[in-house]
Amino acid sequence: MNSIWFRRFGTAPDGAVKLVCFPHAGGAASSYLPLVKALAGRLDVLAVQYPGRQDRRRERPFDSVDELAGALAEEVRPLTGGPYAFFGHSMGAVVAYETLRRLLRDGLPAPRRLYVSGRGAPAPRPHVNDVLTTDAEVLAAVRALGGTVPDVLDDPELREMVMPALRADYGALGAYRWSGAAPLPVPVTALVGDRDPVVDVDASAGWRAHTVDGFDLRVFPGGHFYLDAHATGVADLVVEGLAATGLPAGADA
Image 1 (tube, rainbow, N blue to C red):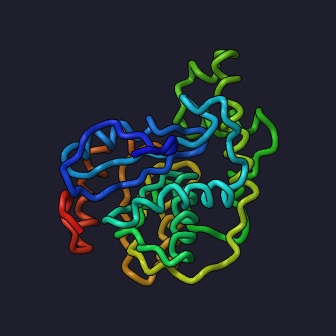
Image 2: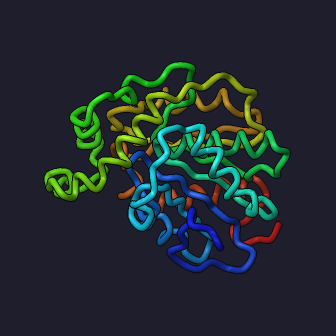
């Protein structure tokens, strides 16, 4: 793909379903490497690289979910001519949902399924864990979730490299307001760790109200980043979910 927004870390069979993966707050495309490896030979995984991190570190990160989703909707447009699906973890679940809404609003083909991981359903008010006003609060939240290597947060130089993206992402989440919308005509699968410190099973089940085309809830052992330890199980679930839509992995539209 000729886009600075997506990273492919492997190869896929011709005609494979494209799985667009949206990272968590402060996260980069590489956070999906375990899932990419587990899906090798089955799906064409495109991991989103938000501005402000890794090879896009010199770009200004978005501090608005709406603006980020709007930019991504334009980037995803070329993918909608074939079978595709969305997978978003944590903040990425919200960005995937809002990106999908924009595609539908513009009359473009919908993804075959939306996978939302480690995130409660959209609501008119931000979650208390999203309203962080200082760097200290952001760092404490990141440490509690366990998704960032402690050495990165403890090293002043490395910490300063990741802080702009973290500030922007948590600022975007804190300012995000779901203004109400019709349920999606897309099946939704919600995934959550049974020991997630910020998202419980009931909050994940709330996504049921956001679809009229089938809902599934899957609970995995682990915390907020359960995916790191269960990439194979999640990969199997993703392929299973796409098969339920009548589209086996690797099949043409």
